[in-house]
Image (tube, rainbow, N blue to C red; front, side, top):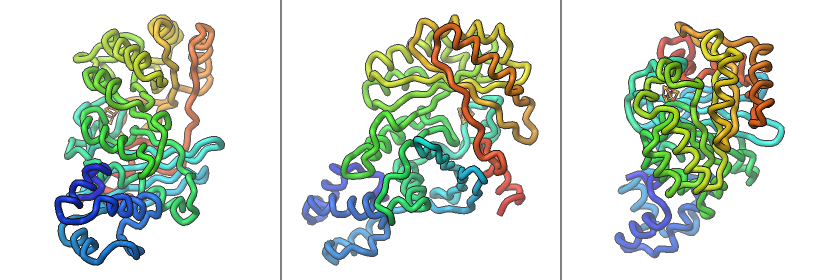
Length: 348
Ligand code: SF4
């Protein structure tokens, strides 16, 4: 059993069932989440019997760093080993007003979005809550948050490898622990779950979690979206946007449509007008993403001038729009690239 898979009540119950006082659970969480001491090296206040129980019957930390790449702009990308000797990626992006960690939810993915490198990797497993929370703890340790007793890491986005809403229960539970005041005390709105549009789970999310929501949108009509993202056949645009509307109404959280700019594919002025007409009815914001090409990929990046023209059309329709800054250009920044390079031996 991994203790990081348990919320506080479950941990209290586990301790009680094994003859320990409930309040010990908070002491254990304090060591793990406030001090970053998941090996319980400084467990002065815990009885020896409890330490032995934890060491013999449970384990705590399931992820470790395999390799690290640092960009000149401060972006850090890690390849992280999870249980079963599988690897996922996480990226730390420091900015002026926030510092974001992009984490993974699955090893590989089943959805085959054509622009995505991870989509070329066979799905191997869903990450457990412990493996998801473990990524955040590890990143906080790497950037010195525990030593400095600081909260340098301000935002978390589920935009790494995998489709979070196809690992719904584990993602939901990890968010519940991340926002717990006794754990890492993140606010719901500083966590963003990004999905390709798994509609039934967006509807479920509206009742069960209150994170910000991002949709991998990428096309203004069903024909093009299905071509780029086959999942659109199952959950077409109208159905998806209605689920977003429901999410905004219920949670009062922001929904952002992510739109990766693919040269000559989805980036014409007509596409911009179509996107504006489509999204006018919904209170969503659009985030344009300059594409990060990867070896063997069929798409190219839209030139920045054209991205700005596209943005102007959307803005003239009074729709909130931003252009994502390209970060980590000098490292293997596109999702799935570092893992691929590690596998083929280009990176050690
Ligand atoms: S974009 Fe997300 S859902 Fe689509 S293949 Fe990549 S990881 Fe999977």
